[in-house]
Image (cartoon, rainbow, N blue to C red; front, side, top):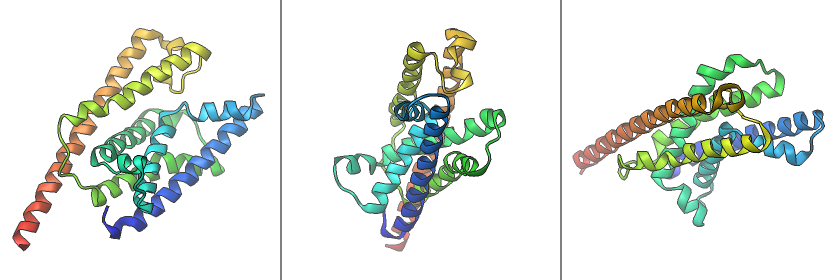
Length: 219
């Protein structure tokens, strides 16, 4: 990432960690209110794709803001990884706003946390991706590789649900819908992931070509 965009990465990373901390606090508080433990609250927190994807994009932004060059930093700095993170956070916002927002009405600090992870962070991260991520190395074949993340999450949800009967999202609730319908829902969501990933690669490659042409004209 070029130096001018580090303040953006720092601001977005700070907001992301704040939103995640709020979400974790509410998860623990709710779990304890139902007679559970702090550990169970953390386990609940880590069951949501929204949380995992916000952890991913916030980590990417933190690496960008700090210039970390350890193994994890190098991995999270890869354009392919950063674009996969953009794919995931776009889907988080789209599914929440189209399918889930109407299911509850948070208020107060819970509303603040909700807006951060579902609205503010997707916008900030996509803005960072557009401005700061080099995209000349993006390849169409990477689109399928990126689907290992949502696919892995799907099997993670099924395994958790088989153990304790809890499913984080209504369209993945095997108890209510059965495995056939949940699998059909998952295929539909996966198709959305692929479409968003293809659009990001197309836009990214277009942007990279424009930048190369502009640099050639200047030279």
